[in-house]
Image (cartoon, rainbow, N blue to C red; front, side, top):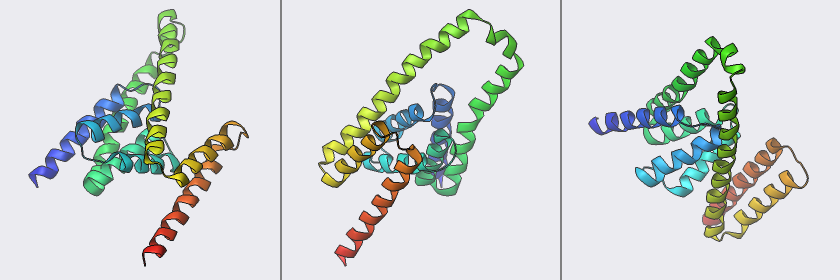
Length: 187
């Protein structure tokens, strides 16, 4: 029981910290969750984190909250999911509440507008880093089927401007079919 409280405490503080100091949306927080829960705490395997990210991305809603839900649930069940949700939602709620009070002052402030433009460049770099890390993880697996899905998804979204929702649905369906085929093969 003490270990569970320790995990819930670390989960709360980690997701609270990540949510409070992450700018740029869910894809940025997913990378930082990977660094925290895979690289630092070793609570989740890298392949598992990729799967959890895929689940979070395909569910409706903000990817940061969805990522926190799936990671929290994986680590500590329903209590972990609830702890992660609360910790992830508190910082944006507080920040947006404060910004709404001072919106007119922020809107016309030159320094703040320049700071936000600089953050956009940083967010682009972090998202590129996420793509590189996750894509290289798939490439390192040397699984031809996964590589074909990766290339097909990229091609459909980039060259043919297929809606990302359809790409995710098709990739999810392919993953389900592959899993079912592998189970059938084992039997």
